[in-house]
Image 1: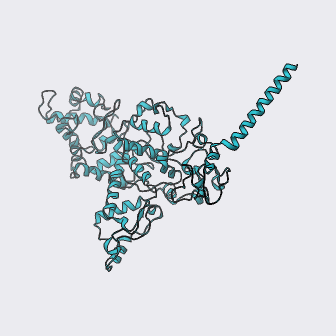
Image 2: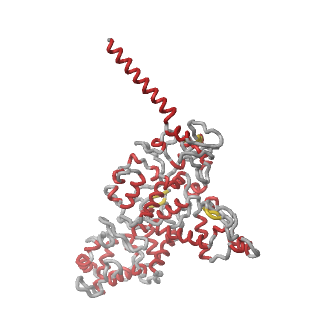
Image 3: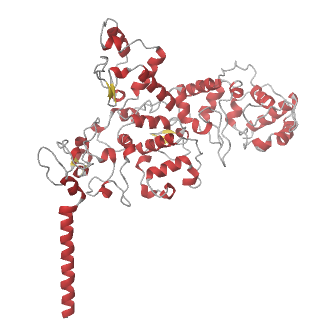
Length: 549
């Protein structure tokens, strides 16, 4: 009995010691207290837990217990390296808190917990280099063009030296040593706020009479082509330049051909509308390497999809490291926080409720967003291991033989049984957008539309004889039933309904340059040469599939 009493006494003293140690740790040695102990300001800085509470958003963020200078009214605090004031942004952090933009665990009081680096926390903090991805929580930049157009627009804005008078993302809009310049309106977020389309006429009217000053020295007439590029630049100023660049990279890689974002895109791959909110605990991060983080997993997935996701049908796309970085940022930005109506920004309303496009609707951007993933940025096709070759659709031989109506039917109806979807749907392309894609294709190949074919169906040959020739000569690439293989599927209702006999005859006879399809009317030592009558017979046989799909 005495031994038990001693054991109880010792265990009680041990528990008391642990409680005292915990109390000392909590009151003197916690990280946030040590940081605040270094804080200096004009007035004493009290050591206490701080938080930004936003009741309407249901958030309580204690991040300012360490980042004190980001707390309301304490921007003058200096000391520890984390005691830096928040850089100037559109929104006041004291009104919105921290986690709505940066994610993480707002109520935590230790660094690992607050940054969401603890196991099973579903919303880790967005890495600092991708901080603009947090804008996607609420905002949806609209009308973003593909990367090359965005680079051109940026270059034109710089060449015209518009920063002489205007500040953009913290640069420009000041008086220069040579006396030029002035502080005009800040354009950093004019793409969200909107601007008067008549600005150029007003600028011309004001600069003409000016005898001296910035209006005479800093502004000059702009060529129409440059003026359209300035408009692209202004439309994409949303105070998040790297996010716009990331979105432009997404619209250049053909991702919408297989994935939906905000209800627009293909069905081959998963919907990406909220991909940035993915719980890392639900992802096998082993492929991300030693430093297993979700952003590293995304980057590896872009480099080699099948190596990260078993049986992935996503083809390898040749991307530079800079492009992979941008695509990773854009994916992290795909978030859709539920907001009270008064907090929903204008661009998100225009996209989700009024159907305004997030991408520009010129042919180059539409082709880059929907088609380039399979057909290549140049339209010359693409090959991927284990998959049927994606055809060259900007081939001049193809475009010289088909009408715009043929191409329009292909885009609208797709290729049933193949990976080419029908884009005439609510998730696809509008008629004017399809026409823009066709015009872009013809521009790539420098091939205008051919004149209308007065005789779409003129071949009347022996289909039985054509069957024998087809199976001996064509089936190796196109399949014994025309189902496709190395060559495209010919047993396809959309193709046969749109193709004229002249198109089929010319393709067999002359082939298609830049592809494995040789012309069968030309002599060859490795394959059979077909006479015009034999080619007509093959076409007649192919036509029999219209009755037996």
